[in-house]
Every structure is written in C-alpha cells, then in structure tokens.
Length: 391
Image 1: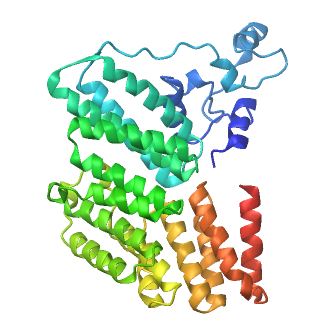
Image 2: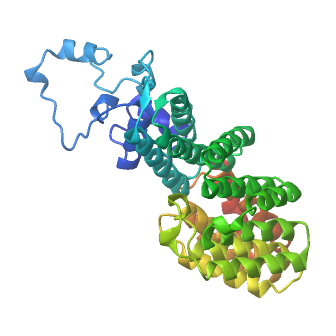
Image 3: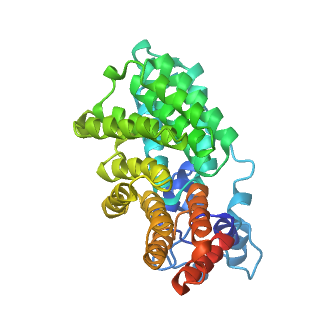
C-alpha cells in the first residue's frame, strides 16, 4: 500500500528498502538514476564500516545529527533540486520514453489503484506537455502527440479512480485534443470510452452515451476489441437508464465484436481488454438490469467468469467484479453464499486503494443490511466497515 502513512515511513527512514516497484516509480518521479540517489539502502547487502570513515563527517554529509544513523527525510533531501530540462528537440527516443512511462503507470494503476502514483503521473504529464513546443521532425509530430495523449489518459483514469474528477476531466480533454490532432482514432476511442465510464459512474449516463456515440463515429477504423469495449460502455449507460432492450442489444453487439478480436492488431493500451475484462464489463451492465429482476443468472455467470479469469496483474478488476457478484447474490440469492463471495472480494482488494472499489464495498454493505441477522452477513458488514475505516 502506498499511502501517506507509507510515504511518511520512507521519509522517517523506518522503511529503508522499499519493493522494486516502488523504487522504480520513485526514481521516475524524482529523476534519480539509482536507488542510492534516493537515499535507499539494502542493509542485507550493504554494510557501512564506520571505522573506515570519519563518522561525524559522514553523518553531517547525509544531513543527520551525530548518533542518529537513520535516513534523512526523502522529501527534504530533494527540496530545491533542479527540474529535468525540457529538450529543445524531440526525437523517437523521447517519444518512446513517454509511451513507456504511460504503460508503467497504467500497470501501477491496475495493480494498486490511483493512490500515490497519481501525482507522479501528473508531474510527468506536465513535463511531457512541454515537448509540444520543442522542435520535432514533421513525421514524428503525430507519434509525439499520441504518446503524450496516452500518458494523459493514464493520468486521467488514475484521477478518476481516486475521485479527483476535475483533474480527470482536464487530463482526458487534453489527451483527446492530442489524439485528434495526431489523427489517432484508436487513442481517441479509448479516451472517449474512459470519459463515458467516468460520466456513467458519476450518475450521468446520458453524457456517457454521448461520449460513446462520438467514439463510434467511423467505427470501421477501430479494431474489433475496441468496438467491443465501446459497445460494452454503451450497454452500461443504457442499463443505468433502464433501457433494457437497447442495453441487451448493446451487450449482444459487444459479444459479437469480441468474438472477432485479434489482440495483435490492438494498440498497447488495449492489452487489458481480454476475456475476463469483457465478461466483467458486460456483467456490470447486466447487473443493473438483474437487480431490477431481469435474469440475475446471466449477470452472475459473467461476473463469476471474470473473477476466475482476471490474472494477478489486475487485482482491482478482480476485486470489483467479485464485489459486484457478492452484491448481486446478496440481492437475488443466498445471503450466506454472498457473504462468502464478499469475504473473498475483501481478500482480493487487500493492496488496492481505489475509491471506486471502496464504493462498491459500501454498496454491498447496503444490500446486506436487510440480512444483518445472518451471522455470516453481520461478520462481512463489520469487516467492510473496518477495511473502509482503515483506508
């Protein structure tokens, strides 16, 4: 978990050797070439022989008082450090680095949620946007805008997951402008899809529907996977609006498109949209119909398939699908069985810090309220309360 408490431990020197993923992210955020430059030391690998150095000089050099062999606060050590200058000319190397940063941070988002790295992505996006004013070969201007747009989408989705909606909207709109200037129909579709998901999540399904319909303009230019993604979001908006027949038709179109998916043809940001993601997203759309009485078994089957299919790279998606399955079971099936599924969802969400996942847990607790006299359900609601209070 990378929250304020964790960062505080880094700053106080309580944690001297964070995991490889954290070190990689912090090196990128702070522009450090090595872990040592951040002040991190692996005490199992490095032994400082104070007899070989002037102890007082050593301690003063790292900003510590004599007798206090701990790391200086990380933030304080970098105060006043020089920012990385924006190059005057941009080449394929810089473009590749931006795309790589977007991919790395997107992986962080899938694994841990918006959390700590959101600020890191914002800083990287701010720096990368400066490259738009740099000199660039004409043939690279489109790829540059696409790479920056990809990073903007990653930034926007992490902000959305953290419920920083104004930040998310700004990043999405900037990314959309980059995609449209680059003539990148694939990135345009992805960003509009995420804008639709944000609108639907916030209770504005009509706005979400508008974004999806914009994304489906010239759908022939998109891959089958991308069209499946868009029709799935279309179904979710329609289901929220209780337009049952149209929602079911959209699920059918999404299934048909996904049946023709060829991952090798997809852009890199679509790698997440596999079978588990597809059945999970369509299951979410059917969930909104199922709680109104329309064939709960269909939604439950898809959500269960998603839970089984999500790999360890997507714990947030697994936790959200599992929570939704528990909620559906609580609403339409056996509450004791729902409690078992809910406990498993809490286990899956252990390292995830996502406001969306947290709200799904609150929804599960609300549906469970009427079954509170069932011991398993009471235990589940108490654990949900404890987990949410701690986060």
